[in-house]
Length: 109
Length: 303
Image 1: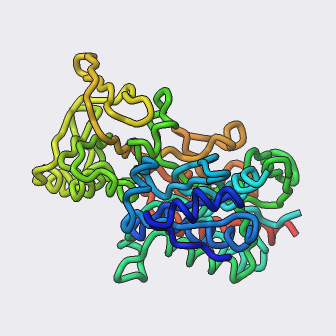
Image 2 (image 1 turned 180 degrees about the vertical axis):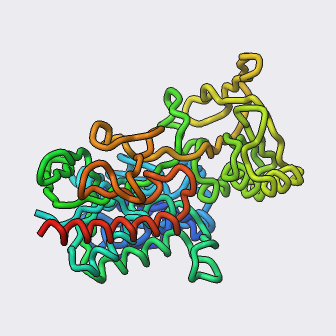
């Protein structure tokens, strides 16, 4: 499955609720953020490689504000992994594909 | 055994890879933590020849990688954890794997310097940032500190005034190191203030930054100043930790022998890791080219 677009309106259902059946990796990004652009193909590849195991959603901080503020996002790219309705892992900044994969593997345990 | 291992994935590493791959050396590249190097966190690159309209840093690096891979470079997104250049063949350790090679190009570059104050890691993303381009947006109508006195610091400060209500530049000494043109631009900006002889010695805040402990370097007085965000722009450090005891270092930079050689035959160095003076993408690419040509010559002579 490819990544889905997250908004303030669908976040609760697509992330928080959905994470009760499958972990969800969320990517908070913006077009003007260079490391976000660097991460974007990595996240896209991982979404394909872990198809059926995790769900991946992208939240554009220029379009949404409520969820980003609630999570205290002050730096992007910012990533949150949800499982069973709660955040189980989060980090900011660019990271190698291998390291992100490790975090996904951990969330799948 | 490998003909050539390239350590690092910035302009120096990729240029070396393009040349070496075209010379059919089938180079193996280890990218390190910051895949694509420092340009990954920059926006527009306006001084790289061939791009009259500028090019985004990540796009330039993606193109270089594609070009290196096109000619047969194997790019591995892993970090080298130790090296042994004194053995024969030379050894490169990546986690629990050891690779052997006849020749090596060191192009590990430099990374943004951090203040390394207690508890610093937890504040990144919580009011502390090393990327104004990325994070300025989150500080609309806020008061900010920019730490640093060079061109990069002033560039960040000017950029941040697009969002912030006030930006105070903290300069460690009593003078700016920045170029005259940048100083003039910053001084002309009504939202920018300067605080000289000032260093941050601690962060204030439980789960995010609400202030900073600032030391006056002239009087040694310290006081807590409320602030919404802190942006760090205090320069770069070369990534040479794994080469200590292997290659000669000078002020933490690798000290080249000749243009791109080292004291060990078959080990070459390129880019910012050996360049405290110029530190440009194009000069890094240039030395990457030289290092690959030297490695090629070395390998031909050893057959």
